[in-house]
Image (cartoon, rainbow, N blue to C red):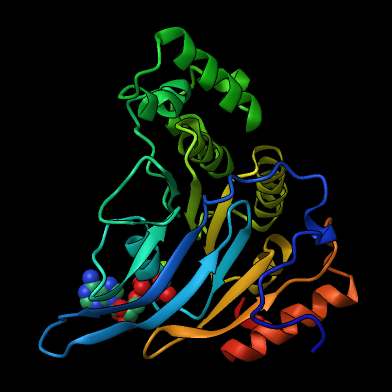
Length: 276
Ligand code: ADP
Ligand code: MG
């Protein structure tokens, strides 16, 4: 299939035209990553020899069937779980634990219920060496970015799922990380909200130039968002293929090229259409 291969995008790719550029070395790389869980008696080989690289400023989705090791890989990249083999590097430096160079967004919102929206967004800034005025300015910027300026004093329990996830994104970006790392972040919201959040995330990516690694099992979501898709297979979790999404942005689901990419990725993971 034309344009579907493992190569990196070229610099003059029209798909990224006009976007803020990422720092040249802000990318992330997995190099021979393996993970074996001890399990109850039987060890589980969750990941085997997973290697791929995300360039600075690139938007890459990680797609695969349930149980193929997406969350395990996400946690290893985030420094929350150790790899059994291989290593992950962020901007060339091995990841050995959680770092503020990554903004992490989980499927479950993980907001602090006792803090307001603005306190949640400013949480990571508390430990930074910014002045109070700088912190407030940064929180304002982030609230504007995700359209929540009018909800700054609201508590999470009064927010919809989509709004909670906007808060989580604003909080992740507030400390100005190199990488935005997301695990099925829109998995818990309804389809309409999900499409709105996808558009908003692309706007945020365009305006900030961040590197994004986004985990999903939803193939259409990956084709909507990604420059490239790392397609994984299960048992053991491994990279099946890296697919270039050479469909012009803004992408329309009715576009034949969109449909071809969705079909190709679905074939790779053996998914029946009704499953996602
Ligand atoms: P995905 O996110 O793609 O659904 P996971 O990374 O959650 O996949 O899981 C990959 C495999 O590792 C599965 O077989 C799962 O049962 C197993 N696994 C995940 N976490 C653990 C754990 N803490 N202990 C043992 N096995 C685990
Ligand atoms: Mg998962």
